[in-house]
Image (cartoon, rainbow, N blue to C red):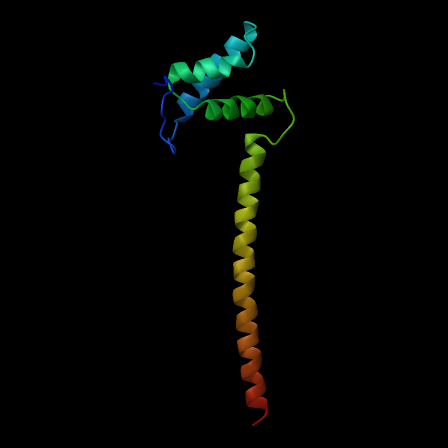
Length: 111
């Protein structure tokens, strides 16, 4: 029988849980344990290894230790994408309204 833990697929972690895992991995790395620390810490806490790896990677980016989009930049990008979707939706409504009223004016002028 396998000793692997089965973790729920869509488990939600609190910010405190994420921060704790990242701190523990960072401490283990400082002690020279490298990235094997991610596996060990994830197992100890009962978290998904890939989740912990991603949190540590993002923390490294946010700290300027690695290249990539910071958490703040990612949030701003999501906001801009949502605003862009809304503007496209509104623009579509305005185009439909202009077309409707333009056609109505054409019908009235032909009478």
